[in-house]
Length: 133
Image (cartoon, helix red, strand yellow):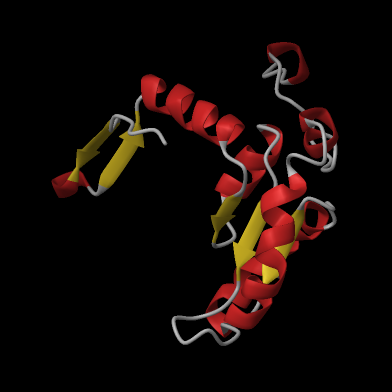
């Protein structure tokens, strides 16, 4: 287990917050060491896959029932290609989570990090690939 720092700068009066560079590095390190990323659908899932860690998205509410509110994220157009990865799953009920969690906790151990990274179509940014002229 790791206890990490808190590298966020926040200004409530201006309604913004940003993670400092040290916090970004720490976040990527945490994702690379994690066995599994469990979250609601978000960019954290992309970052997790790119760090070589599988993703189990939560699609149910506090009662354990499918959530229409979360479904708008799990089925959003920007998630379609991402959800095709064999290292991404969405649990739509508490019972589904209980059934598949043991398998997903072993999924990183049963695959290499590069296979997990390559499971989504991703084009890395390089200065040469982004010409402002």
